[in-house]
Length: 359
Image (cartoon, rainbow, N blue to C red; front, side):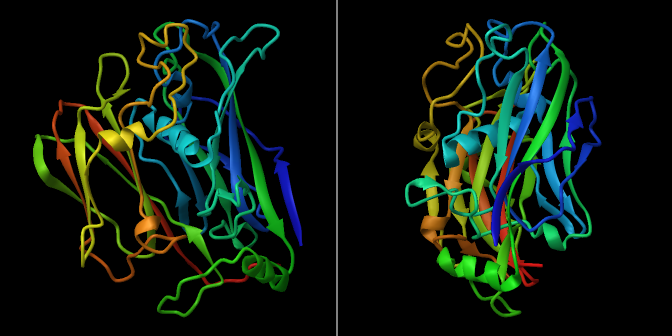
């Protein structure tokens, strides 16, 4: 058995493409994490120019698509806030800063590298250490017929009012485990992964199956009266929400939209809360702009984000079992809304994998 980290040779070159820029991912072993770095060359330094969330908007959507469908994707909007949601989810789950300074002159880079991470498993850290080879959930790359990372981009004006994207390159680094089927099964056991049973029996592993919803509210909703269906099947580990306000230039994160959330399961409601304290649980926001206080990017929690981890309420690795469940709901209170506002909702789900682990 081998555990490897390798930056693949094939890259993606930025262009304004709503259809997606495909980057073939090597179909080797079980992929347990991807580090996706975009090297942005701006038209001028970002020291005092970067607008709120500017560099994170270089990703409007990102999805990993195999022969049997999508493993992960983001809820997208035209303003590129899907990338912002992924950045802050990375900060929340792994604590990674995700970018360096925006000073694009010597001795810094002549470009700004911003990194996004996709960790399929449920234990990005384990025993107090980073856990990149987490086998609680994985991408069975070696057993895929095709595997592409698709980078959806918007216009080159997403960074700022005046500074644009001159060019950008996406580099993908993959963490993967290879070996025989027996060796990888032993690794699952060594990591003390307790796999849940399904109708087909106990799977050999779990794989991600993210599902998304982008919803534009049309009215205020009191007392959790706006309900969204939670997709059934598999297990639901978490629900992650970004609220955005439509503005004249670009959408911005907003605290005044969803002010309460309730998760409704068939037999009980595990969560029913106002959201301010959930927003305040986020790590400090980050910006590359010199005017970060004016841009609401000082040393405080970033607004407009609500992260619900359902694992403490259910299976400690996988959350709620939704096999055969069709009536699960996410209910929200909407205090403010306007035309063009959106709720970007990500349902972090996993489903069983019954195939071989090794080659």
